[in-house]
Image 1 (tube, rainbow, N blue to C red):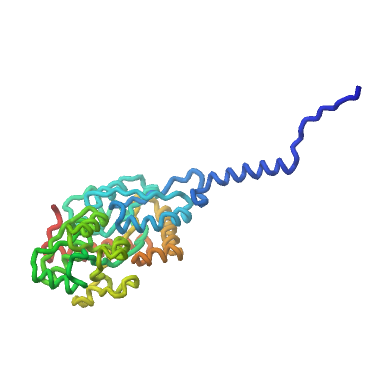
Image 2 (cartoon, rainbow, N blue to C red):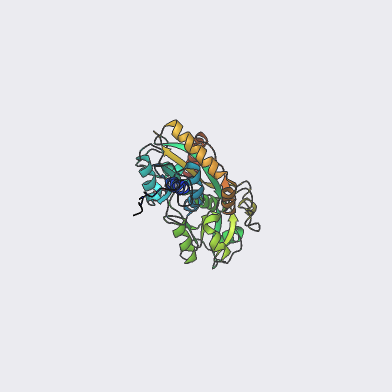
Length: 338
């Protein structure tokens, strides 16, 4: 009987190589984010805490930055809205967070104004935070309901002069930049327009759309959709120059207030005890993200001006804004607390 030799199966070199490559690919994939971005294994996510609800300027800007920032930082980025109490809820949350560079405040101009507006805060604006970057600034667009019979700011103010108390404006809250800017315009023009504070840009827009308020002052990003749809009409912008996206809309300075300029801004802050090296790395990540050509283009199309400063420049800016608007509030005896 012929002898049969049983052979144990052997792996071909090509099959063995394929299995090895597959395992390596799977290991590499475990380090990738959802869009194929390489994230460091075990890296904690970076949380950007927003002081207002979705739909406002800070929320829009954060979500433009989010994907690219994740790629630059090598970790996932979470945008978390914590609205309420004129941004105090979100700000206190970050102030009490671990100073490890994983939780940052993505804040509005209220950060500098709250210590003017509020006699007591659950945090210290100047001691509990360190600046990462003054990311953006932007002029406000004064947008009116289509029911307002005026085509520009000068026309609206004339209506307000003839009808004291008939018109109102919606702000994002007491002591917000849009509140103070409109109060400044009222005093310069000698008009009375009722102030109605809301809890963010989204609710302020809805108030104008519903004819609850006659106008609001927000970023172009927050109003762009409604302006394009013809549901809100822009009357003026508060910067020194007209917006390229709204070339026919005059500045406040062109509307009879020579030299007038006012900008809202967005800054990134870390808890004050965050190590300097960690803050420096965060600054580099934000600067790289903000200066990425496609991100920069998206921000500019939304009416934002990219600043991308370092942390000390932001800290100086906060102090400067605090002093400027503090003088304005004191000189004009503006009531900022409920």
